[in-house]
Amino acid sequence: MALLIPAIQSSRESARRLKCASQLREIGVALQNFEATNQHFPHVTFQFKLLPFIDQKNLFDLIPSQNFESQGQLPTWELLGDHTVKLYCCASDSGNNGAKGSNYLANFGSRFIDESGDGLFALSFPIKTSDVVRGLSNTAAVAEGLVSIQNSTRLRRVWGIIPPVADTSTLPDVCEWIALDPGSRGYPPLLGRGIPWYGGVVQATAYNHLLSPNRPSCMNEYAARIVVLTSSSLHPGGVNLLYADGHVRFENQMIDRGVWRELGSRSGTHR
Image (tube, rainbow, N blue to C red; front, side, top):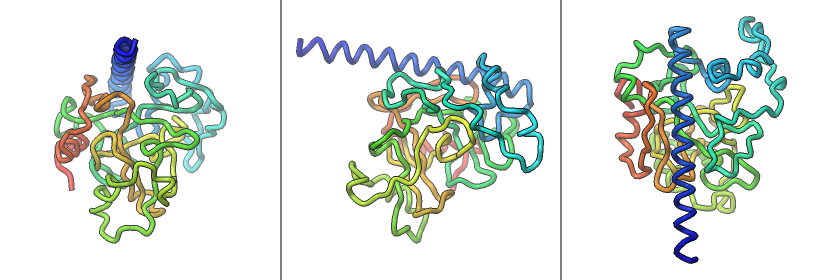
């Protein structure tokens, strides 16, 4: 039994990882269909804007269209309540009970969050295929992320670096060496990850390529844009990554940081 149980658990996790990759491929097809319809990829709130392309138009229609068309009017997200989108939930993450959570995060590039960004998603404008200089097959689109829960562990929160670092270029290094038990070591849990899946809160629904997968996420004190947002999963050794052309690859968490940053940049360069 001591030999059999670990083998069964490993087999089940392999099946969950494959299922998770399959869900990402479905999201990839939806992204391609959205781009073909609109001539650009979805802007910021990709989880919500893909709903009509994943057979969830009834859920999409709960938010009045004028909320997006009227300048200065914010969407009434509360109309979505606790609706769950099963496609956005990875079975390996038992912490994601489905209530407003998504295990799939948008790539906002290889640097801190700013208006333009260099990922497949940006704050100020939607990205077109022609903007992806590196090519769709070489550019990350969506990666896995663990959802925040009560008493969240190291990978499920964005931790505050207080006092802040003066040289923000060193923030990824500081972040990588956050203690295994950040909460008990004085790091405040400033933001959650993956919740809610709607609303366009970048720190919750996106990630960047400043650190390789399965490293901690952190913020330079309370500067919401000076933030390291990592990809994470409970799959042993890495994360599933959807590329902009729709293919999915399992990326090892030991991938070189420079290579990982290149994958996050649609221009093929990072600073």
